[in-house]
View (cartoon, rainbow, N blue to C red):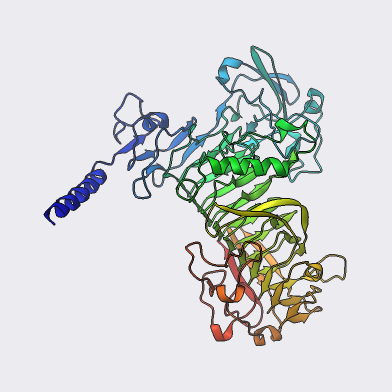
Length: 633
């Protein structure tokens, strides 16, 4: 017993000492890398602090713009012993993957030129590198990973000098006038020349930056766990296309690690991706593109092979994922705000504002959206505001145990939510989906509960692709099969149509042809939205228009609507694990990630629902009459 006490006290003492000896290193623009890194004698680069930081340490960066690639050498040892990178409280700290460029020479009206030696770029020149990868569509032209910025706004790359000097307003972009600010580049063995049409601006008197780094915060090696990144303004990196079959490198990228926290940052102006939580290079690098000569092997088979490569390398909950991405503002990224192939498993994505994704539309591809995940196993995506993003959320392959809850979607011109080739179970609850196409469901085993849906809903089968499903709460594959369509549950939702009788499907009509059984009850249909033939306990008032409006003023978004009297008399059941049952293919319950039973008893705001007075839709206890609700602030 005495030996046990000695051992216990020794362990406690070691833990106390480890916390006592944690260091805080400071970085400031008045510093020097020869300093000790104290608050009075800070380093001048974050790279200098990286060389010293170990588990339990904090790197505090002070006001200024830091143009460097932060490449962590070590991570933390646990959630309690992290390495924390943070902006000093109350100070604006910018991390940029770009450099300021002066010395522009005027060529003609609006058009200027700068010639840079290739040595300026070091071992990576984004004006020689081009965007490429599996499922990338270049629209018949070359796209460099580099970008040119005038006063913080990116210019449009042109594929020829003639188009540079004769720009036209673009019809396929959300900034047609901005598309007349253009650039073009050429490189040889010694020099890179960049031409830019700055219109009336003088680039030698304005801030002009060009991207020079492929990322801003990314460990070059995997195995760097338990890092926190907090409070920075991160922008302007020459990021590459992040296919699910390739290394995925955003401006912030975890590089196949575990337990990162990415919080309270402003992340903008990435050539492709803002945050990536995804795959590394060693398990495959654009394997479909590399095997194009084999006509009998499509992308589906290549990705399945990559999945098994990842499993052989030890993809488990103990080693990969479990990240937290919260309270970030993410915008002006041309592929995704957040993406991840398999590396996002077991993570929580919450309270992020994601917008203006894929706005320039100079290229296309099958990996674009506000959030795009493959294998979001037990991932929680909640309380995010996603708009003007092409697709809002795209959950593609192996969505199991995931929950999409309390999110706001609007002005996404493709879909708010695209669920592709998954077998479930997954839950979509208490969301507001207001884009023209709300849900495109090419999966099975989903539960949609207490949502407000003012866009089209479709369900489709996919009998050509065999995709995996797992043992519950695990990365262990249980089997592979195709998508028949159905095995879905729709409980207590409000559907609002456009007031027109047309071929558009604003309710659940598409489920009339679902091949697998469906369970549909407690839903409300207004303004020409139509139920399925399998609906039970519904309200259908096709002629009633709730006059739904969304108003955004500054950072605040308000929802306005009316509900007819029958709504308040329509009481619906409380939905829980027992009622939802099991997904047919995976044979798994709709339950929480820890295996406990699920009770969907709170609303969009987290307010408790009344069991005896529960109503359809995402809001509990709505007043009678005109309803005005602040849904984002």
